[in-house]
Each structure stands twice: as structure tokens, then as C-alpha cells.
Image (cartoon, rainbow, N blue to C red; front, top):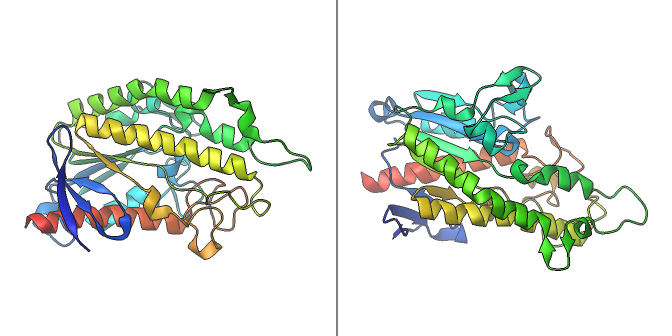
Length: 302
């Protein structure tokens, strides 16, 4: 593997992994490599986000049950690999950005405090996966499931002429995501903040009828996830924080892949996972990959 340092528009130094066309970037920060116990004592990690971070249905369930999250979601894998001192996982299925910054989230286990309340001046690392629920993309994806013998493309429900209602909704949320980053930075001024992007969930054209979504709708849904990722990547660069692009890593491992190679389940599940959510394998691979980049970066600085 080869590495190269790059700088964003804010001047922060970054280390990019150049091999395998992965294109993931990690901000330089004193994150301990595995086995460095002296440094590990100083690493406090807070994970925030929605169900893609929480990994509902992946064994084993983590409390509180109302958030439907796993002890083997990508943040938990990352925490174990980095051997963090303190790990606070406030990811919660169904979360929106406002559940991070503005108000409690109501669940079957009661009200969950704002996720940002877990962050303070001692926090060293924050990961966030958020945005799809802000634009109700999961609900829209469910509407795209083929349930009749003569289906019509669901994307026609969202695109009228040149107006794409989901794209417009995504654009409207960028200021909300920017405010979230500012609030996290204010509470944890020395933390490494990583926006962890959404994954590649399907192959071009999908795999209808193996997965009950029409080819054009499969491409449309992936395109909307790409829009969220791309807007957040631009925002991260503008704010001087990191964006971890999970799409290259998960390409060819979406819902159309063989079950034993699948990182993301489709409408029909084979893994212990919720439809249209990470598999145990996917959560592990993303968590390990994210940890590997942080550790590799730390080794380059030694």
C-alpha cells in the first residue's frame, strides 16, 4: 500500500490511501495504534448516527433495546480495534440530525437524550453517519419495492420534469449538517471528527427480480445516497473535518452480491440483519477498515 499526504481547503493535513482506488481520507491526529497502551489511555470515542451505524438485527443486541443497535456495529468494531479507554455508542435506529443536536429521540425504551450530549472536552474521536432519515430515504426505498405484476418505476413519484424532490430535500439539509459539525466541534474542540458516509448498496442496474426493485429505481436510490455522501464530503472539506467514503470499500458487496460477500442487505435478507441495512460482515469490514486507516496514519507519524 502507498500513502500520500494531501491538504484540504482549510489547510488541514491528511493522509490518503492510494492503493486499490479506495480514496478514503483520514485527518492526522494522535490516535493510538493497537497495542500502545500508554496512548490508548487517552482515547475517548463517541459514536453517533442512525441505523446504518447502529446495525439493527446484527448479533448481539446492545442496550437500550429501543435503539435497535448491535454490539458488532462498525463503531463497536472500531472501538475494539483501537482499544479505546472509553466508548460511548449513542447511535440509534431512526435517528435524524435533529436527534443529534436538538432534541430527544422517542423509542420503545423511552426518550433517548440528544446524541451530542455524550460529547465533551475530553472526547478524542467522534464518528457520525447521518442524513438519510433527514430526507426520509428509507421510507422512499420501501415505496420502491415491487409488489405487483405490472409495476411502474417509483422514481416517477419523486421526479417531475427537471425537479427532483429528494435532491431538493438533500440540498435543504446541508445547513443543518453544517450546524451539527459546528456544535460538535464547539463541545469537543480537540477531537478528530469523521463523517462516515453511506455505502454502495447495489450494483448498476440492480438485480431484478432477485431483488424486488426495478433497475432504474435501484440506480435512482443509489444515486440519492451518493448525493448525500457527496454533499457531506464537500461539507467536511469546507469545515476541516474528515469524510470516510465507504462506497469504494463496499462496491460489489451490495444487495446483489452472493450472501457470503454481502455487506448490505437488500429487500430479501439472508443474513441476521434488517432489510436495507448492514450485514454482520459489512459492519465488521467497515469498522476494521476505518480502524486500519487511523492506525496506519499513526504509524506514519511515529
